[in-house]
Image (cartoon, rainbow, N blue to C red; front, side):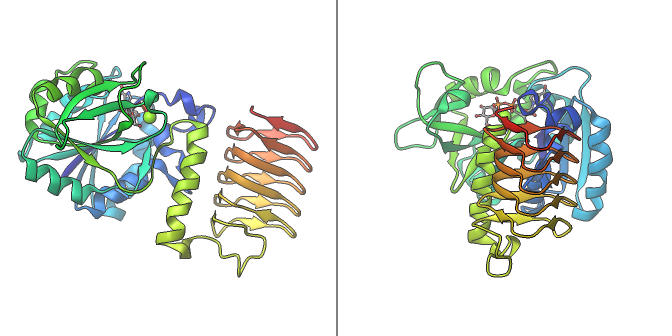
Amino acid sequence: MKALILVGGFGTRLRPLTLTLPKPLVEFCNKPMILHQIEGLVKAGVKDIVLAVNYRPEIMVELLKNYEEKYNVKITFSVETEPLGTAGPLALARDILDKDKTPFFVLNSDIICEFPFEQLRDFHKAHGNEGTIVVTKVEEPSKYGVIVNQTGSTLIERFVEKPVEFVSNKINAGIYIFNPEVLNRIELKPTSIETQVFPRMATESQLHLFDLEGFWMDVGQPKDFLTGTVLYLANLSKKQPQLLSNSAVYPYVLGNVLVDPTAKIGKDCRIGPNVTIGPNVVIGDGVRLQRCVILEGARIKDFAWVKNSIIGWHSTLGRWTRLEGVSVLGDDVSINDEVYVNGV
Ligand code: GDD
Ligand code: MG
């Protein structure tokens, strides 16, 4: 099977991290976001992955070419000269997507869940129409694409992107499967799949929904990145608890904590719940971390206190600093000793 991942866009909502790396390469729970998706696709038997890129393709190519061999999958870069939106990239990759006349997956690159690709494929093949959208329920639907289905049916009646007034709490989770005929609806120019393609397919009764089970989050902005981390770690603790730090072995651990084996942790720390610590991070003595993400190579000096924040690669927090309120540090930022940082 084939898949296309939408990896364009400038990731402005995740700055300053995206000033250093494109959003799909920012590590979520110690793994580049896009690897979570590639692993899910590979597990479902996908052999051909197209990455639709328009922003700094060279960094992406360098990192991802390494994974072709590791995962035994062909990765093709489809590079846009101007941003083609969320549908235009399908037209650009038409030759690959259309080649064996079988359905293909499409996904946004900033979403995290237990990707149900195999069930989605079976469901899609069974109904026989052009497309299926994975849906989830959220309390605040206005920042997503919202879906209304026919009563008692999976057929989608309406698709409204980012509605101003309440329509429904079922939203587009950013995972689709399409028959190749969908390509006849899309021209090679900047086009939005959400506003220009889905509403039409819904009117023509060609679009179904597939209910997602379990957790889901769009991790494309700091607050949601932290919430997504909490959900992902909770799921790990149920499904693969051996990957989390065990508080029976490491007494400084509280709740769900993921630590790269190369990280160093000082004496008398209290870490957790809901913390991820990347490779080569150095944590001093008496440090208190909760609900936060510490990226590769960062250094947290003695008695620092961090909550609800993201510390970028190779940044340094001085002794007795306090950081909270969804603060995000980019690459190589230094905070002097004893400084208080809130919502920065
Ligand atoms: N190749 C390419 N070119 N990719 C793009 C472009 C482009 O011009 N513009 C955006 N993308 C990619 C982004 O990288 C992301 O993976 C995906 O398209 C969606 O863009 P976002 O900017 O993250 O959109 P959103 O989060 O506001 O809304 C979308 O996702 C929601 C679920 O998270 C929509 O699909 C909503 O309907 C959906 O509910
Ligand atoms: Mg998004």
